[in-house]
Image 1 (cartoon, rainbow, N blue to C red):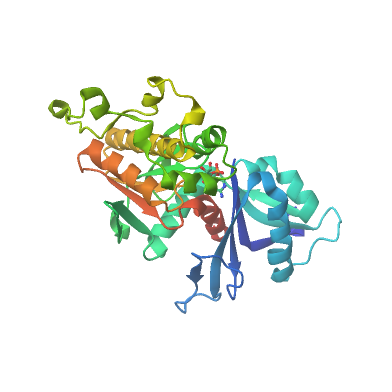
Image 2 (image 1 turned 90 degrees about the vertical axis):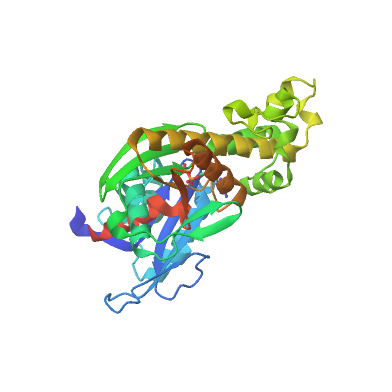
Length: 343
Ligand code: ADP
């Protein structure tokens, strides 16, 4: 079969529940969005160019098909199959959609998916970034972003927390050595889904924008609300700590309409981020892991989200564990699938 298929070795897809992520090679970097990675500039590689990134909503998969048709197939010099059964173009694909949409890609673009395991791709993607891309990992605490230079010989073990529609937590011990140890269904999909229902906003960007302007203290029940403004210092809780997410909504007899959507969005973002930070910390503790890398498109480089997660990890671990973020957070699986071309 492979005799008759041509590998397009410059495109990989990660088709998730919410978003489709594309990584593709472009010799001149035309139409590349921000964050592209220069490859082959060390003189060792025959190919020089850029790794480019693109994303589409899974529910608008036709936009993705058009993009590939116009920007990748036509520019690649690879001939579109002429319709015979034998001519196939093969690309690396991961995520649930690699199964769900396999027939669609075959039918519409003549592309056959060479499927890569999702967890394996995630881990490969992170390892690739940490080992080869400078200024990839950073910490975010107290409004300060600090890049961390990772020593290749001292990379493992670490905990990878991928916050996509759902959340996966993976203990990584080496190249190809990993185990999915935990997860939670309260993830990015929950934030977006509940956010849409509660605020009537239409998109993730709109929801983020709302959360930016909101104040979670309007809806969250704080320790100070219970203790009359004072700290519960005996057990180390400050008056501003959240005692109960959305807890104030029970007491004052208000309806949803009485709250500002901004405040609802803010509480929701805080609740989801806090919860993930806490579960991540508990799993790091379980296996004695000091470093936690957070990825997935939920984060989107948003300061408030990163700060909440960092504070949760810092608070619960008493400064022992460190939350770290990745510049190419959303493309981990797609990058991992891309790097598998050389296997
Ligand atoms: P998946 O592979 O499950 O689709 P991703 O890592 O792509 O996961 O993350 C999806 C999540 O990212 C969404 O649930 C949402 O919280 C968030 N997100 C970020 N940007 C967008 C966007 N433009 N549209 C929809 N969701 C987005």
